[in-house]
Length: 419
Image 1 (cartoon, rainbow, N blue to C red):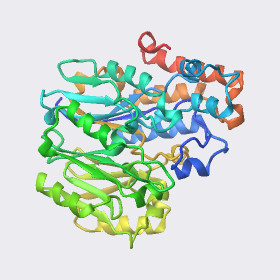
Image 2 (cartoon, helix red, strand yellow):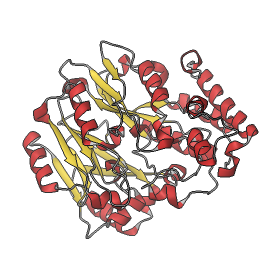
Image 3 (cartoon, one colour):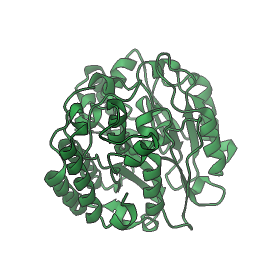
Image 4 (cartoon, helix red, strand yellow):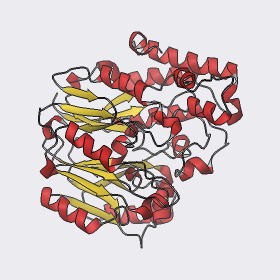
């Protein structure tokens, strides 16, 4: 084996529900109060991973978190039975499924000490996500425990909000070579909060030991955030030497493009004009919240939600793109509707790590047979449906806890991750 990009997907947890907790996430707000289907959600996510394996990609997993988060509730002076509904819902949130918010990753080829650095995201802007990082950090420290290859860092301290890889891009000639790391931050989002603070981005770049000449700090446009692009990965995605972006993603795109071309002359910028695909259609379809990946034959594929195929302006543009001679040659629609209904597409569900798989704890890497075994556990244990009013039901909570314990025991991680 050698250094390659590994996509670590979050397994969608048994408490997956639609409580509408995420201000600025239009899909989350639109579906607040709806019936969720945790079993179907997790199976959809696993099927996406299975498709990646069949494409010849290396696939990793992160586990759901223990829910309800009784330790967090205790710090607030309450418990599941007595918490106010919005606090109970936050304690039950399955939002750690969106692994793009788990951490920011700088591969060994970019860092001063030649090791891969990961900084767990603090997610302080949203209460339901702000308590994720301790359990995320525990998994990162197991999966990437080889200190010769990895350094796993504590979160950036509040109040500097850090949302992880969802606001970070890396461009390079090829995955194993030194790259240009792009940190995207927000200043204003109109009625919605800008979640990534520039000081958090700068701190991560310093902590990871990045070369300042190959590190860019770029402001996300207020227009994009106000339209519902609460993370940069809703309006832009990068892979190797390709930046795939909406015309209105950045506050000063001309300056950004010029800096990027100066730092990486081989870069190809594929820009979707607003005249062809509006911000509204881009965000509704999650066109850019796609996995842009390099296939074993060297070609690039866009793994995107089926909603993109169902949005006429988006699909028309994509078909015209692949009919040309550009770098993106293949479209792979996937059904992740349960995740999409809470505001997370294919890219939200995964964290990209460039590393040698032999350096990673094998319990976090999967093939088709292992995915099949996990899918069987999901089919047997995950609740079929959850209504927001069910979140205080002791029988549902017991089932959620048993589901988690069964999965963790199957993966032989119970000794490391028991709450």
